[in-house]
Structure formats: structure tokens, C-alpha cells
Length: 424
Ligand SMILES: Cc1cc2nc3c(=O)[nH]c(=O)nc-3n(C[C@H](O)[C@H](O)[C@H](O)COP(=O)(O)OP(=O)(O)OC[C@H]3O[C@@H](n4cnc5c(N)ncnc54)[C@H](O)[C@@H]3O)c2cc1C
Image (cartoon, rainbow, N blue to C red; front, side, top):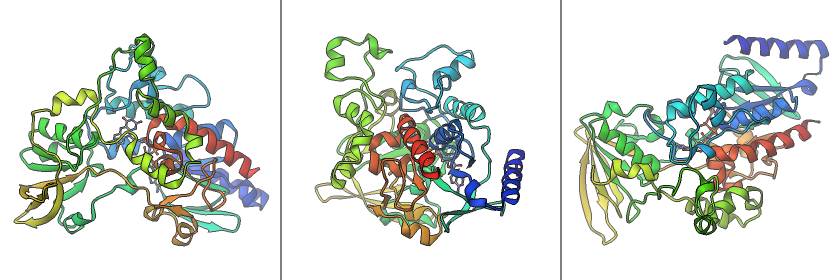
């Protein structure tokens, strides 16, 4: 157990033994140390809420995204929210002696991981690098079990375990899963091991296109298979700084954290209002606003480099002699064969509370859901009092901004305020 973990455990035991009233002093527990967990913890700790936070700092980025990747979000929209100024990506770059950057600078993932860890060391030094094994409801609170076997009580729990538990694979590929011939993009931190292999990449979003580019550059032979009729790329920003764009451009396509355009501006600023839209509208917007597309800077690494089979769906996928035999269906009803050594699934993430195995089954069942996602209050609280969900799990309630780092400000402010009010 890391030293800070031991001291927090000692501190809590001491408090419990001394007072004999563990629940009154039970800490709030934040599960997860990615951008959302860190931003929430930073706010709770600034509000002097007794807190324990668990997880590996930036694990989602370090372990479940490929080396060599770049962020699609621009630097101005890639800061983890903190209660005080001085902890943005620009501050990190300045502290590292690096020059300021604008919208034309794609952030290398290694830089962003470094930034997240820098943020954690300064704003969330109490992080305990242990995993939460179980959460169960106990009278008026929660019983927490860590991987180390330690057990303690929490007054509230904020679940910020990110995307990985929600990795989505089309059901017709399940037969292949056990063979190791298929994998989700989140299972890879390094794609160079595929050098020399034929890899079908399923999907048309940034993750699919960038994975295919990285595979190609590593000496693999990727083929993109996409349901969409064509692969789409964003347009490069007109200038490096939004303020220097012409008035007509700014009026037609106002800048926002999610990119230029009125609809993106509305969803990036209107997360609180989004929650009041009818459920069907919310779920539709979640998938259509910012639909699958590649970043502008990715186009030259993709176009003309490897085959892209658009307008195709997987009709069947079967293992054969250590390879995958795919049958692809086109809209005209035609079937086309494709033989590959591996099928890389880049079909994204779907929120489903049932996938959160660390929540004891009875607790999971008590969480009211819609389409698998938790129903949340304006303060990110689920139907189980004291149990909060943030990050991607909150996107079906608050909209697409919660899928990105730029949503950490809204989420952390709302959650920390509700948690603080709830435990008083
Ligand atoms: C390929 C890819 C590219 C992306 N690019 C961008 C981009 O350019 N810009 C952008 O804004 N967003 C991007 N995103 C989305 C981005 O990943 C999320 O917005 C962000 O990481 C969510 O942060 P989070 O804190 O919710 O989760 P994560 O960053 O996934 O962190 C999850 C945390 O939970 C912890 N954890 C998990 N289980 C447990 C447990 N049982 N106990 C304790 N801790 C646990 C992990 O250790 C980790 O610390 C991208 C996503 C993907 C997949």
C-alpha cells in the first residue's frame, strides 16, 4: 500500500476509534483519478469536505489509449477544472518552460498524461493508488472494500471510473472475443505489435481513423470498415486564435469548447438545461452532435494510405485457421469477403450501470436508469441518495460536453456543491 494510503487509513481508523461514531466522520469517496475524479476531488477538498480518492492517475489515458495518439480537443478545451486559477494545460506548459499554443496545436497524449499527473500532484496529493473492489449500501451510507482488503464506511460515493467499463462491441462479434482475434481499441496502449498483420478497423470516428493511421505507420496493413457512407474530417481552424477570426466567421460559427458552431455552443454551455430535454431527444443528440469524424490534422495520415470500405456493416465474422473471415454487407444487399489477422473494434462506449462490477448487485439494481444510464439530479446524484456518477456516465443526462475534459468544470462544480450540501 503506498504511504499516503496507509496514513489516510490510519487517520480514518483513529477518527473512528476516538469518536465511536464512524458515520458522522465517514469520508466522501471519489472512485477514479482521471480528469473527472481529479476535478471533483480538487473541489471537494477546497470545500474542506473529508475525502478519500482512489485510482491510478490518468490510467484511462496511459493504459487504454494508444501511444503516439494526439488529442482531438484543442488546448483551450483540454484543461482539468480546478477551484483556483493556475492549473490549466497552459500553466503546465509554462511550468515546463514551453511556449503558449493555440488551436492549431494537436496535443500529444504523452503531454496530456504529464499534465494530468502534474495536476494530481498539486491539487489532489491525497490520492490513494488503490482500486475499489466493492461498494455496498449500509445504513445511511456505503461500505467500501479496497483491493488491499481494507474496509471502511463512506458518507457519499462519487463514481468517476471513466469510459473503459462501457466499451461497446457489436453483439455479432462476441463469438470471436474468446479467440483473441478481436479486441476493442481500449485494450491497447501500443499498436506497434500488429506490424506485418492485416487488421480490419471497425468504425469511422477519431479513434478508428487514428488507430488505423498508427497501425499503418507501424507497418501493419489496416482496412477501415465503416457503416457511414463516407469518412468525414473536420476543417482546420481558420487561425490559431479564435479572437483573430473574421467577424463573419465568428458570427456564422461561434467558437465553443466543443468546436465551432451554434449547436456545439448550445450543448457546451447548456449542460444544465440539457437535462430537461425529453429523454429521447437527449439520447438522440448525444449520438448525433459531434458524430463520428476525424480531426483535421489526421486527414493526410489517412487519405489514400489504406483501404476504407465505407457503407459496409459486418454480416458475419468467424475464426478460420487463426485468422478472421469477415463478410461485409453493403446497402445494395451485396456481400463481400475480407480476410484479416485481427479485427480492431473502434465502436465506442455505451453507458450501462450494470457493467460497474464494483457496485454490489443490490446497489446497482437500486439505481434507476434510462437506456442503461443512471438518472441523475442537477447535482449528479442518482436515485440512491449519496451515490453520484460523473464523466461519461452523466453524458446521457447532461449531454455531449460530459464526454470531454472540457466538461470537468460544470461537473465538478455541481457535484461538489451537491455532495457538500448532502453531508451537512
Ligand atoms: C481514444 C480516445 C481519445 C479521446 N480524446 C479526447 C480528447 O482529445 N479530448 C477530450 O476532452 N476527451 C477525449 N476523450 C475522452 C476522455 O477520455 C474523457 O473525457 C476523460 O478521460 C474522462 O475522464 P474520467 O475521469 O471520467 O475517466 P478516465 O480518464 O477514464 O479515468 C478513469 C479513472 O478511474 C479509475 N478507476 C477505474 N476503476 C476503478 C476502481 N475500481 N477503483 C478505483 N479507481 C478506478 C482509473 O484508475 C482512472 O483513474 C478521448 C477518449 C478516447 C477513448
